[in-house]
Image (cartoon, rainbow, N blue to C red; front, side, top):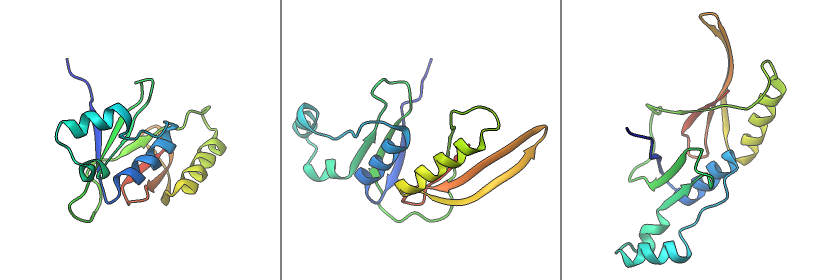
Length: 140
């Protein structure tokens, strides 16, 4: 049996992007501090290594753990994979979707477009968005 470990993002500013995604999911900020920091430093990592990493983690262990690693080059082109973020709401409650879109924009996300279409028998309405570093995700 296997299970998902991390979803890893390459980022220009990993700690800042980790804070954005922590806010998206309502996770508390996670820092490499205290005993964890010392354990990492004792294992051979440097302060510079730690400054180039970030983490967004559900303290209850139910949601995804996101890990952020410093990118060696600028992002170009579209992601080959993206996250679909579901808004918990009643069917047809478009106001809740729109309110969450507005909250994420206030955190630093960008709306690419609103998609309203049907896929087979299913209606779809979602926002294609980008995080502060341009990584695409969908809010549905």
